[in-house]
Picture 1: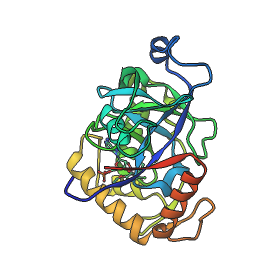
Picture 2: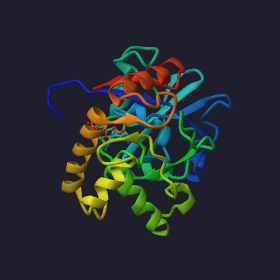
Picture 3: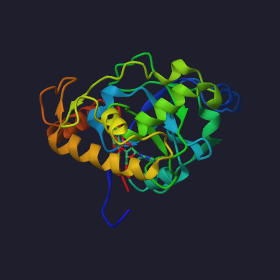
Picture 4: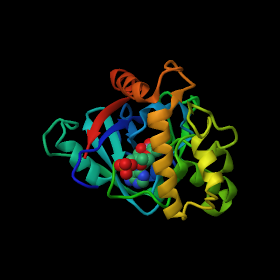
Length: 255
Ligand code: A2H
């Protein structure tokens, strides 16, 4: 995307319970004390309070990479390679892979979501529009402020059976308001409804909604949830990012 560098926050979502296909494939491959994390890359760390699930592309390729004797990351090969040249792995340029997966094998895995009100954990769910060419190919879901996340969650909740998931996994019943913007307290919902976006495949309209949500949230948004409640999003973004990094729940990732 252009020539600039994108500074993401890479969040560490620890696996609490694997999906059945993943757990079978991993038998005997991980040491008992190994912690495995899904690593979504986000540009909106200040929204992490509102995470309800985490997306992978069902047909995208993922790996589990050994980051230290006791820690592994799940992300795309491309992202692991980038991290290997940003000091994330102990040996410069190396990103040892333990196992490969298609996204669909990971669906249903239960992960911890740092800062989220869902302290019981959230589920890995499918999102067809996840790109392999951006971030880590893992996208944490915040329906209050991301139009993509909102419409995908709506679709998953409506067609849970079709997607082979449990409706409860979507956690879409009460959306937590986190940021107040000129579009109200649920910016993504408002934009999706106002622009009559019907499905995750309305890519053109979603692109426009994303742009509007991002600008109004970032430049005119105020936090209405969490310890930085009352602060402008412009300030809260760096404060939440720092808090997540200092607590070991996130690290910087650029591309
Ligand atoms: B954002 P940019 Cl609340 N495929 O995080 C599709 N989308 C991806 C992705 C991939 N491979 N990797 C990252 N993303 C999403 C939060 C969020 C995001 C909110 C609102 C807007 C928003 C929660 N999801 O992004 O193309 C991630 O979702 C809209 C700009 O690199 C990431 O931040 O600019 C953002 O897109 C990165 O998009």
